[in-house]
Image (cartoon, rainbow, N blue to C red; front, top):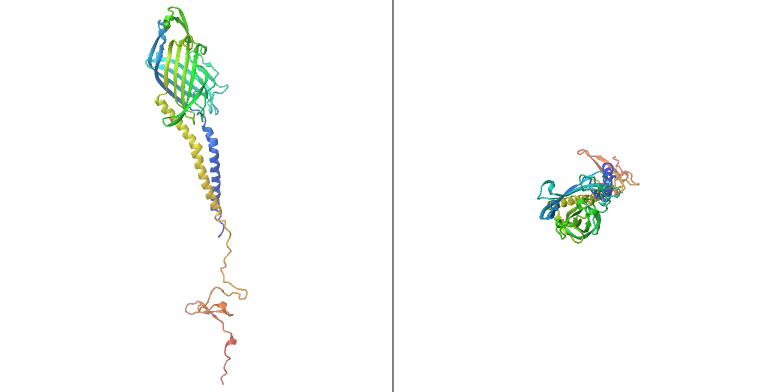
Length: 397
């Protein structure tokens, strides 16, 4: 059989090339594409809401002559996180506007705290970038304070581990470890639970605000001493719990146990300013779970699904190309003679055919001569008569 060529060989080359390309893609996609996906998106926009009830000091009561603490006050803490400049391929500047308000009062009368926090972090590790933006603004009428910070805040790194991480507390403006507690599930998703305890912090040493250190008569504070002036400092403490999707670093659930109080010493709270436990509401948790799942799906598609499919298709293409390229490459068969077979001793004698009478011409030293058949016009072969074998002619007298 003649060697195959033309379209078959072209198709074989195309399949081999395609197979090699797909196999290379299967190896490179997990390392290149997944690395690009494991970065905080530049279009980040997240709103979280935490709700609960707590005790709140009526600030106006201090000037009215008696500190009054309202109990079982409905509270809502809202945080809106978005991306601002400067942000680039490696770093992202996050701005978080945070408010805490009591919902039993309307407008500004219900606003307890408002903060705008801006920080530049690494898009992979989520840690603050040295030399990047780091400001906190607590008064809309004053410029933001530039602060030095280290530690996580709004997002965990990709591939979070079961270990302690530094975490920056915006109220204390200090970094403390947040410790791994357990692996658990929220809405069917595996999450890591971390916990941080912030010891009492003297807020008068953190922010220069007149409300962080006040002097009133003892009677106003509700302590012994009558009209004797008593100076108290505002203290802050917190216990923070965070549940994180370890694969994407998305904070699925958060909770804070806030406690602010006035006291002369940190270990003896005297007048409560704020005491409440504020966990994410269910709507926020569901939204964060979906955000984490979307991130997991993208990583799974380019980290596992696409490489596996590309690898399988690459192997199939290679096998098909090699098969097409080699199946027509067998050894050539010798040409078959189409004319009558001859022998050296009898040129032109057909060794394979017999006469119509069944006589085998190979068995006699005879020469075959053609005879015309008048009815069929076909040639038949008979043995030639040797004149020597005939009787001598008779002479008639």
